Length: 66
Image (cartoon, rainbow, N blue to C red; front, side, top):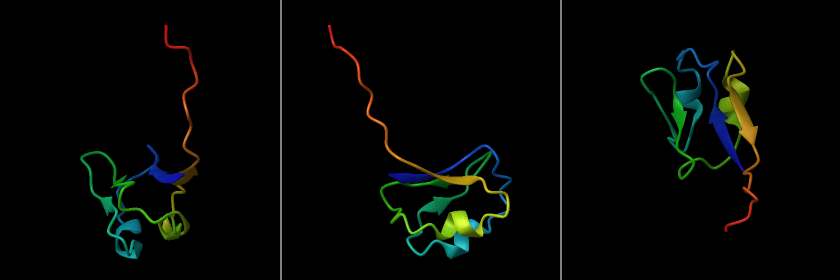
């Protein structure tokens, strides 16, 4: 499970100071969340005025390896 910043991010940076684990950084087009640092508290998503941060369950790719 992890939070992810979507393409709706306009880099208003409201999410950055609220992240106590310093998992959010500025990218060239949008901010990004480092899943290794994120503690899944949800403060970033609650603070984002553009609803550009979403919680996603990790998906496991299922397929055959031939």
